[in-house]
Image 1 (cartoon, protein in one colour):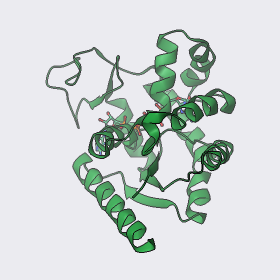
Image 2: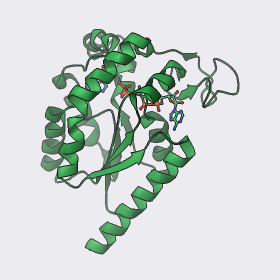
Image 3: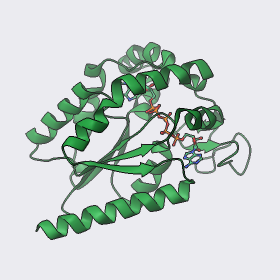
Image 4: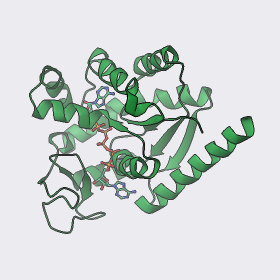
Amino acid sequence: MPQLNLVLLGPPGSGKGTQGERLQEELRLPYYATGDILRAAVRNETELGKTAREYMDRGDLVPDQVIVGAIGERIDSVEAADGFILDGFPRNVPQAEALAAKLSELGRALTAVLLIDASDEEVMRRLGGRRTCVENGHVFHVEFDPPAKEGVCDIDGSELIVRDDDKPEVIRHRLETYHEKTEPLIEFYDHQSLLRRIDGAAAPDTVADELRRALATLKLEADEAI
Ligand code: AP5
């Protein structure tokens, strides 16, 4: 396929970050996770971070204009010429429309939206045990994917922390935000025949296999269309 312009969609904790890291390595495409971008901005106390922090701590979406520009710059970069993997963007219909407008301006279009789904109960279980690497956002789970050494990232050796928004009351609010604002994107993209559904409740390797199968099907469809 000439370009692979992918979006990972799904509720908080469904495994978008876990699978995004794997896909990035396998497909050798830039991976843009808006949550990671915003957390780095908060850590570095940039203007973006100062604006975003209060929204993130509550589990609300940051204002669209804050995030749309940051993503637009990245997909318009040289490193994204062959494609990209977006995680956490778009998160509502206005963001999806802004993404479509930006891609159209660049003469590009989305290849697929990969929905990694999981129930609210599974999300609560997963986010309660998540540990995140403070430097680069690599994710582990105390039960399902423990690091070799407790509290230390296997990949870059930095400290593993509990994210501020992984407190039970904030997780519940993030889920409400997802159902209200982000879930309508499932129908939005299904209408455009871009949606591929992946069962995120399975083990990480099984989810990765399903994603590989979905991408292989996309390639077959693209080859047939030529
Ligand atoms: P963001 O960081 O994007 O959070 P999220 O979408 O809520 O997603 P998570 O990172 O919590 O979960 P994930 O699906 O990546 O799961 P993971 O792989 O870590 O956004 C944070 C905040 O930033 C938002 O609330 C908002 O304020 C703001 N924001 C971001 N983008 C925005 C936008 N576009 N517009 C406005 N605001 C925005 O997995 C979770 C855990 O489960 C891990 O411990 C993992 O090890 C484990 N796990 C993963 N897969 C499996 C599996 N298959 N089986 C068992 N365990 C698993």
